[in-house]
Length: 290
Image 1: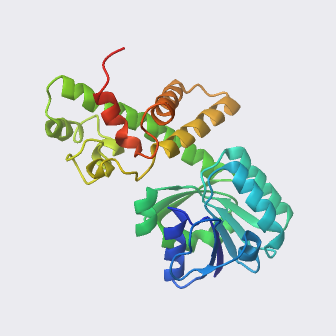
Image 2 (image 1 turned 90 degrees about the vertical axis):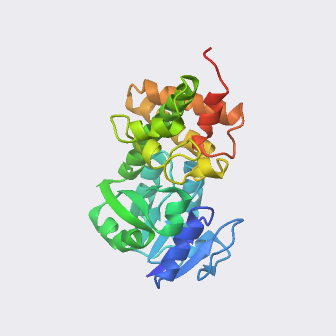
């Protein structure tokens, strides 16, 4: 396929490179980041979209997505697919899909899970929204960039799945960090804590695959001074999206709300900015009950 890729930051860089390595003709554009090896550089977003079979976007937020979409939709040929892999609000995803459809295009919202490591290794999980025809057209690209793609429903369903998933992730990581800090204060060895919880009812991804305690469990950002695999400020962004969605859907999410408050304090008032979201553990270590 002829693929345009817009947004070549920490995630998009690896995703575009993997598409090019698989033999697709990939042209990229980013305001600051360089193109990876094998990806041709374009001078504008519109130039990327011209003649493309698929345009993939990986952008910071819904406002930027809508701005970029307004530039590229007029340049895309009829029948092409706009595949947005950003994590944005559901309303923005649906607006972009509606605009693409009105222009004779197809659209898929397909946010990802797996972080920078997954983007590099091509093991991301895609949560996709859009019609069947659009999903089938980009499914082979998901197979290159990831290990799994789930078609969640119509436009916006991918974003809904991602928001719900990451609300669980933020809540679970906060709880995992709290538990380790409590275990420390009770004099329990961290390895023993891991050995028990990882094989019993406290089992979770944040414990077993991404343990926030250095030197315990598989390698994780905790073993690299909490340099981000998934930055705390990105978790805060996703938690805020979850609460925005909860308000619009009239959903009661007290745990999601509390996790949002915790990460807001951690990122904006403490030392969480630029650290991995699991760095909540040293935060709790230093705190007593207040």
